[in-house]
Every structure is written in C-alpha cells, then in structure tokens.
Image 1 (cartoon, rainbow, N blue to C red):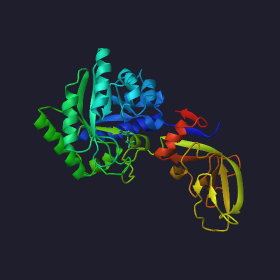
Image 2 (spheres, helix red, strand yellow):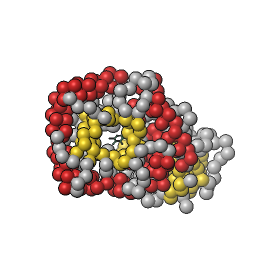
Image 3 (cartoon, helix red, strand yellow):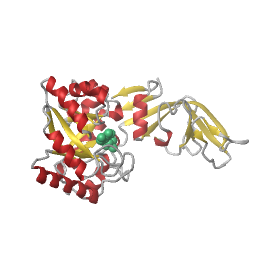
Image 4 (cartoon, rainbow, N blue to C red):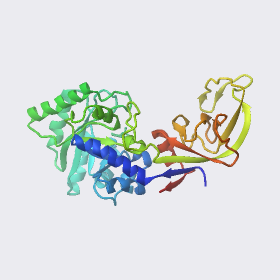
Length: 353
Ligand SMILES: *Cc1c(COP(=O)(O)O)cnc(C)c1O
C-alpha cells in the first residue's frame, strides 16, 4: 500500500552514534526528542538501545507510549495546569518557567511520595518559553528550590524555534554567566545546563569543548543526520533514515504554466510559474495531508516538485533519465516537517525496518 514511509532503524542507529560521538567530546549528554516521529516505540527504542538515557517529548500521550522503555522521560513543553497529575506520573523531569507550575507539581509529587525534577527555562531571545531576565531567573530559582517533592535539576534554554535566535558564542556565554552568577549568589550547584537543541550542533562542530553546558535536547539532527543552522551533513550520519514512497496516478505531457486568469488555491495564493512550454508531468498519490511539499526531496535525479494540494503531488519529470510511467513508485527524502506529518498521517503506511 502506498504512500509508504520507510524507516531504517539501522541508519538511525548510525546517526545516534555519530552525533553522540560529537557530544561526548564536549561531555554533553543527549536527550533524544521523540515528537518528530510521534514517539513510535519501535523507533524510540533505537535511541535507548544506542546509549541514550533520556527520552524527551512535548506531549504526555507520547511519554505514556514510551513508559516501558528504559531510562528517564522528560516533558519538553511547559506542563499545562490541567495535566499536572499526568506529568508527575509519566515524566521524570519537566521544563518549567512559572513558579506556580512548579508548586502544582510539588503538591502532586508530595502527595504521591515522589520527587519530580525540573529544569527552569530561560528565554534567551527566541521569544518562546522561559523566564526573561536575570532577576526573574533568581526569583524563580529561589522559590522553586525550596519546594518539597521537587528537585531543581538545573536551567535550560531553547533556540531557533520561534524567533530564529541562534545559539551563538555570545548567547552561550550569556547563559554561562547566568549560571555562574546564580550558583555563586544563591549558593547552589546546577547539575544540568540544558543548552538547547539541534541548532547548537553547528557551533559545537566548529568549536568542540567550548561548551560549559552538559545537555542538549536533540530531535531533528538525529532523524535527518544534518545540523539545523546551515543544513550541513554530519559526518557518518544519513539523511535518508526516513523515506516516503508514492505511486504515480497520472503521467502526461502538459503545459508548465496555468492558463486563463488565475486566483488562489485552497491553501492560499498560487505561486508564480515560469512557462517552459509542454513538460512531462507526473502526479503522485500524496499530498499536504501526508507531507510538506516544501520539504520533499526526490531521490531520482531530474525530478522537480511543482507543488501539492491536499492529496495530489505534481512533479516535473521531463529531465528524468528513465521516464517514469503510470503506476511507478517514486521515493523521496524528507525534511523535518515532512517526517512529522507523514508519521502523523493515518493515510501513510509505516514500514519500520
Ligand atoms: C522540540 C524541542 C526540542 C528539539 O528540537 P530540535 O531542533 O528538533 O533538536 C528541544 N527542546 C524543546 C523544548 C523542544 O520543544
């Protein structure tokens, strides 16, 4: 059945080993972020089989799916006030930014006779979660530190998610200073500094051992084998752990530009097309319900993605060496958004090798 998502666990294991080797050089532990593949247990288990001790996800449902795997589980999204019980039940560590949230976790953990670990997030300019500014951080730490049932495990930051703020050397030094100042002034030791995500790898590759932080939460780089700032391949890693295969349902020579007056599509404004005359075009049974067509990379040379609607993928196949025909199956590598969407799509068969 097509479309079919093929997941190579061997290749993924290679990526985990390649990235772990980079992190090990700087004494950084990896949290494997599983939301990109909906925490599919057969894929998550490749991480725990290859030396990863913490699995992180933004959704409680996903942590629940992985409860039988070894190691610790981290909730990546700030706990919602309505899900505190489940957070304490299914996560060992959560990322927090409000004292009130930590207090609710504390009450719940105390009641259950458990200890729940928290990492206090700092907004370093990406405009997403975290306390903003040094004094907000001091207050949060001072208050959270004394909560029963809570272990203040450390501090953390996130980059390149909303604002696109890069984890530059300056930013990381800023984080380092914050850590040093709070440790000195508050007389505490922060066991964990969770320095960011896949976007931190770029700097780490250029300047190994320059880090003071000891944890990164890595999702995309593990799955795609590339760092995410310059999209460079990581040595020894693969970018085809996830591949989608789709069937051709139409193949004709047709005009390369729309005719008549044009308006929008169901997804907004239609792009501008260059008129190259008649071109060999294929339509695959695959669409925006299954993938993001901006993040779909044909394996075969000479194929160009023209666009997709919800269920149709239109390709220019004029420049292919061997012309694809009706019923042929084409393979594509995927960007992170496409991996996520195809894992989510009930229309896509999953073949996990
Ligand atoms: C999703 C997420 C990550 C992983 O980001 P990648 O860019 O995929 O490595 C890390 N931290 C948090 C808080 C996240 O939500």
